[in-house]
Each structure stands twice: as structure tokens, then as C-alpha cells.
Image 1: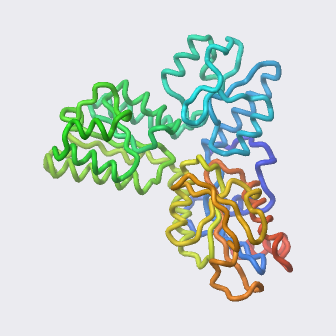
Image 2: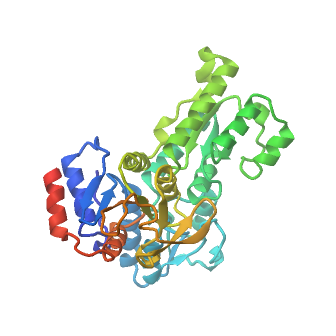
Image 3: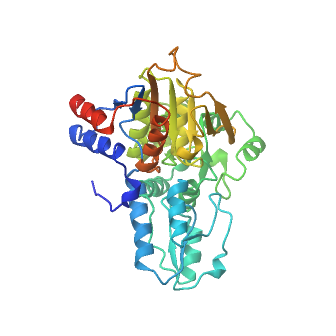
Length: 416
């Protein structure tokens, strides 16, 4: 796989070395078990896969290249390049300006752009309408286009579904940049509809089964269908694609659900006429990170810390998985760790920040402060290794008589 030129300050001493070691010892990525970093009074279980994925590294390389190649020009990002505050802040500090927020609300009007300006398309891609607007202004739209190749693969599948006369069901968050971009490309080829989760899939399934009225359908899916969407006609042939950062198992569950609905309604012998198999739209990095997180659930840990941007979809799903077993703290960086006794963290379900006290010991199976603490540590696909390592070092600073980095890495080498 291609390697990218990523700024050194995003890498780390320990985490990056552990990743490199696992890549060398397991090049085919068959082993999803985590790496144990035993610092004595604290053990960290590090996920097999986490942090920068192919698409994120590609976006970072192109964005920093745009800055370096155009020192005298104004540089704009359509929205956050990826959903990580540190990376976006680094670009802002280099003079890059955001034109929209993550929901598509305009910060800088397109009318303020000049032909010679540089506009970077974020990793999520953008809508065809925005591309057309930029092209009319004379902007070289694709010169610094950081759209993830795996997102573009979903767009290709959407086109194929449309050409084959299937209605496109998009599993995603309707206000997410990637889903808006995918929807804009889907609706030009076929009727399209966005569903967020299994509950909404079942609602749509009820429509296919003729169990809800047109009025109820229009009310429930308002703002999430292509113009003129006709459920009586447009739900006879369907295919499922996804926002690549959604929970992969849920996308598969939704696809299987619609497959069963169509098979029951039309019969197994006519299934292919009414349902398209689209399993290949699932992003490899999303799959690997989520599989690695599931492997973390087998560990005898006391708590989990997940690091990433609070508006990061893929990170929220990792949090969701960890919450199945562990008290889980979702933080953006080490600055959220106030002290040994207090941590600030984000609840993505309620979209509220909380402060929890005695977080390190309140969940521990251990009776004394001198006993070994076991922590799951992982991050989203847009989080730099350096941030994860700073979190680890912040926690280590609260404990005495910890092993040196050299000792810990020697232990890791012996185990591998």
C-alpha cells in the first residue's frame, strides 16, 4: 500500500513503533489481538488497528502540500479536512480558512473567492452542486482534492446501482459531509433515501410491506429523499450503500434486513431482481478498526479511553463498542485529563460534556492504590498517534515506579 508524507509531529515514540512492529510481524492483518504495554502499576491494551487510515493520510499529505506550494495565495478548505481538532487547528495556524462548518452552513461566502484562490476538498468529498459552483468561479476543483478513495468507491457503486435501475438506500447520517456528498451523486442516477440506523431501516421496510401510509412515510423521511421519491414505485428494487465511517456490522445488518424483506415479498427466485448485493462498499479501515475494538472487549481491563474528535463518526462507533463492556471515556486529547482524580469527557449520545471524578479507581477491580490498573487505549481513524501517546504519558505521570519506555518496548519485542 502507498506510503504518505505525514508531518513528523503526528507520529510518536512508542505508539508508532508498536504499530510498525505489528505490521512487520502480521503483514496479512490476521491477528486482531491488542498489544499489551506493561508499565508496572499501569497496563495499557493498545488496539491492533487505530489512528490514521489511508484516506486520512492521503488528505493530510495533500493539504500540507497545498500550503507549501502556495505561500502567496489564499487557501480555503470547504469544511474540516477530517474530524480531528488538532489536525484542523494545525491547518488553521498555517493560514488555511474554513468555508463551511461540518453541517454545511456557510462561514465564508463563495462570492468572496477569486479565480487564483486555492480550495481544498476535504476527505469526505463534497456535493456536485458545490463542485459546480467552484468551477463556475474558475477554481481548479480537483487540484487539491483529498476525497478518500474508499468514499469514491461508494460513489462508483451508487452509479452502478442507478444504472441498473435500483433505488439507493444510504446508511448514514444525513447531515454528515460524506453522506451529503454521496447523496448528491446517488440522486442523479436513481431515487435515493438516507437512513441512520436499524430502526429507520425497519420503518422503510414497513413501507415496502405496505404497512405505513404515504403521509407517514413523507413525514418520517422528510428531507432525506431525492426529489419526487415515490415509495410505491421506487422501493421495488433496492441496494444499500453506506457512509464509510458507520458501524460496519450495522450496515451489514441493514442490508441483510432488506434482503429478507425483498425475499419474503417477491420470493427467493426473484430476489436478484429486487435486491442488489453491495457488501463491497464497506471501508477496509473502518472494518479493521472495529474488529480490533471487538478484540479489545476480550481483555480484563478496568476502563477504556477513546481519543478523537467529538464530531468524528468512526470514533463514536468505537466508543459505542467499548461501552458494551467497559466504563468508557471519550476525550479529544490529554488536556481533558485534569488530574489523577478528574477527567472531562464527551457523551456522544447526549452530545453533552461531563466531568467524572475518581475515574481511574472507581471502576477498578483492585482494592488498593498500589495495585495494577488495566486500561484500554485506542482512537479514531483521524487521530494522530502523538495525541494518543500524550494521553498515555499523562496517565503514567500519576503513578510512581513505572517501567521505562525501553523496558516496555523490550517486553513487547519478546512477545512478538
